Figure 1 (cartoon, rainbow, N blue to C red):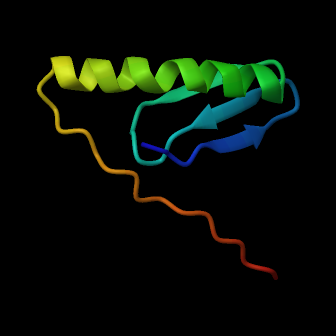
Figure 2 (cartoon, rainbow, N blue to C red):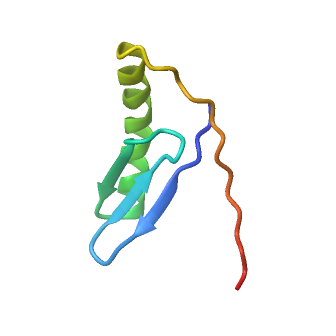
Length: 68
């Protein structure tokens, strides 16, 4: 499965989260670190959901840009 990851850059850190997997989020010092951490976090999050008996959501989020 391929999940959309949102990257948010702050003044001192970079966050990454998966909209289709609530609670699956990480923070790193740089973009590359955040991407590496979220790549590790997604399978762990899915494993935890399975262990808890939760259903795994199909990827549903898609990006769209709106020019203003």
